[in-house]
Image 1 (cartoon, rainbow, N blue to C red):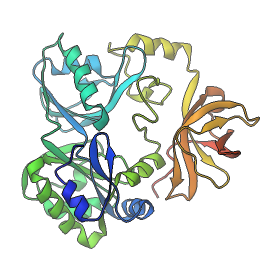
Image 2: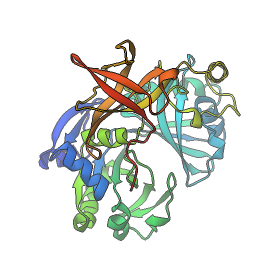
Image 3: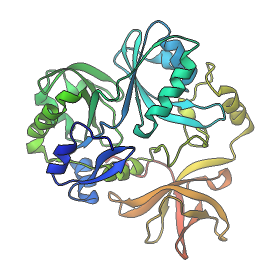
Length: 362
């Protein structure tokens, strides 16, 4: 089991620790609902140092990324980030990721913890044609997600960089919490604003301490992975391994917006043909109309009880007080307002297909 640079801090804080993607991670501290609400209303800090980081550099860096990524990486400029996925050759998804352009010919790829080895092998295999310089720096860096509507105000005292000027999916590199060369990125997985902050492992303890010191008057709290999951699900964000994987179509998953057919990439012909034929299934969001909690793997039915799909993610939404979930259904059932059923034990609980996100910022 791998530890992050902050594992002992979480244990000292009384976090419930669980194995996650090969790491010993805090799943919760005081409770999922309280932590969830604190991110929605104040500011919370997640240790997400288990995520993977790859540096791709050199004159062929862009050409390699254009080949292995679905989105048009040429649209990036220094200081901007881009959501992306790695398509496979069968029309599925190797992983989803964020790409940062650090310099003119250097990119930082941030990948899911469970897929670090798989992604590295995939990109390395395709790099034989391009010869870009690849470095897996996953074991060297720590990552804190400082999320919530008070994040800017709470963190501004730690840097001379104007945090309010960093727009969504942009970033700055500079001094933060007394540490040089920190990446401060206006990204996150919660839908409540804030930053993701990257530093070297040996600096993570200082970063954590200074962040909590700066945030003490703003209701700052440490947040576990369980609340991270409820927060992302309220936003309708896909989770790799649940809602998308090697076998799911990115177009059916609603990722057509980051699938650019203006270039050739791995599997582009398959996806282009699928788009032209028309989709058969679609990932939808739904909310229960009666009490219940939909769980991953539960069957989705039509109004006559016929099984039409499975729940990929589901929870009781703390911000909404109702059961919500996502799952793939045939396109004829995918229109918002359609009624479906969720098989919860012996009961077929009525649900309505809704437009994502579930949670709308006030």
